[in-house]
Length: 388
Image (cartoon, rainbow, N blue to C red; front, side, top):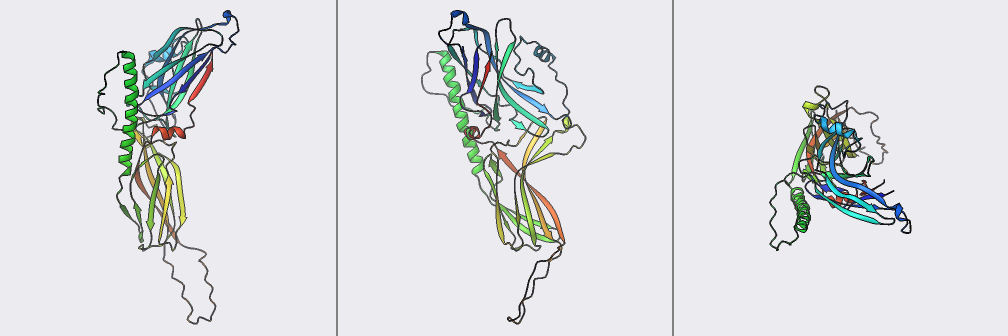
């Protein structure tokens, strides 16, 4: 038996375009004093990254996969197919890389191999919606002689930030090392580090711009409130802060509800039904009674585990603030204080009120966050193991 473990060196969250590094360790668990006949041999091992598309059959109508040769190979257990046994369609994969061939491990011996691959920038982000799911995995295949291939899968998260493709990185002025393999390895690591720094800088610039946005909220009865927000572009993990002013309203507002939502809409070409409605998911909400309130505010956190807005050929995801207001249909007369202060007065609220409700949607833009921050809250395991 051989124990195979794969560990992502920097955690389980990445930006598209970054380099994913994984350390693959193989160990013979037998004690070192075992006989030489207990040595274990593996024919080869290979690694590959793929993205799997899962869809809801009641919402999405996908054409059949055109890669029939790939599906035929998946039935052969001696061919390395990273998505063998998984449902859905493989929409993206990197070229497979061979880690080793003809490996022999004596009792107690272990060997480690490093795998590094740049994540494609033209793929979708990781996403788990009601109609569509995009799942990324690193698959490591190992095979003994005359045996079926065993697959070890390590899931990870990918976030996509537009504008990083084709960014010109300056060339190093230092003299290149004489080892060409060392040059390529160091160059890829440096480029990945620069890309992460560039993404952090672009996100900071895009989300730090503040300008006052005022919205006058009115109903059929008249003006209700003024809504103030200082920006409409956010990073995952930030708080959406807004302020209401009811002091200048003509119609009293009894209660308001604001929800932070995502709108998942299947593209028209892949909709199962004509004029199919979008799906909405609520990530945070704030409800408040505001009668006789002059000014109030709310703060809604954007979950670090959520996906930023994106659009693919199959589905699009957009963020919005959804508002619901409960207003008085008829303005109630204010109670009159007795002229003689010695008289006792009892004021009670009305048992019934005629109300109207209306809603309003404000689109906002949500961008990815730093991959290091996303890794700190990721529930995906950065290490997986398998016994062969």
